Length: 457
Image (tube, rainbow, N blue to C red; front, side):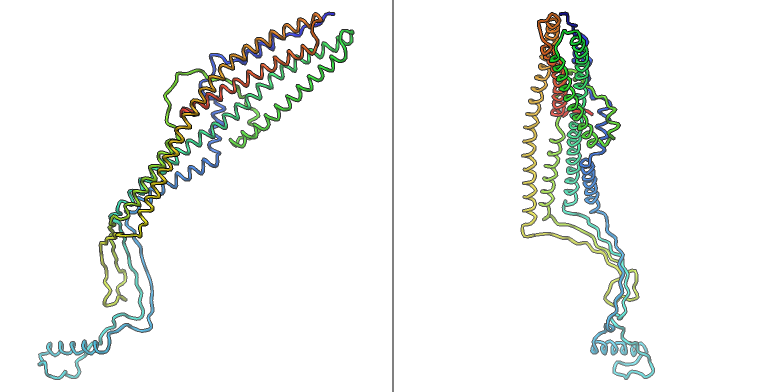
């Protein structure tokens, strides 16, 4: 009996159109870069990092502010139980001295009696019981024993470390968004492969129906077609569920509404082979280097605790009515503070900070080793992915030729409908392998760029 041949050329052309071309991308797609930008703006951990950097800037301002004068205005009122006075003997002596001075002034001899009627002033109190005071104090650090400069230097290194750590965090966020985007592109491309398979199954189903009506096929062949269609529906459902999940992940990463994300049309386009650039220092390494310098600056600052500190102190009384006989109106002084022995606290704190710096040094060595390993791994993965793409091209050629041959055999009663479906399934699977290969190639290239510190977005 004569059987209708199921064409394969359109399907083959569709699969070959998915192969990488010399015009492949060198950089990320604009819509992907926009998603990355929104993801960076939305990420809470990155926002926290920015806040920590601002705190480090404030620490620098605080270190500089040590040398600014501190001016305070004070006011207080005090009531004593009584005026503060000299004892009776001292007051008698003062009164006697006053009388001698008066007699001398009027020309009386020393031994003469004090003339009656001449006034004698009462001895004033040392301090009245009602005391109202207001004053201005100035405290000015002239030399901090290199404490302020050490704190400033350490804060600058801390800020740099936080900023580099933030840049490294941006890379990780971008990598996650790129991976999710590529996974979504893989799902979309796989769905297009399934759509093409669905069209060919529809053609086969239509032919089998007519063949059964004409007695040229058995109902079992129709059931096999129905089973293949149900299996295809199952695959489509699985891909649709994966697509929904990936859209939710992208929404969580970027904050973009799911309705807008549905409109995306991501494509799996492999990157061009570009001239190899020298490896750049990763932000993770820079962050650890700055953290180490910050710890060493802190250790030096704590070690300088034994250097004398110099400060100026000034005081001025705004109200003088209630000042005691012993209180000055104003004074200015310079003082020195010298910690000769603090119970070994500064030495121990300095040593502790040095150990912190050694810890960062070990982390730095580990990071450099892991980066070198990641570069090698990414290079191997990229080479394997590109080789696999070449293999998949051969696989598609073979699957297409096999399908063509089985169709001819089926037309001449030399093959069953099961053989045709198997050949179609192999061709479909080759399409999946192609998309997975391109996906892996993109992932390997992105990982290599990141490992070399050359990831651009």
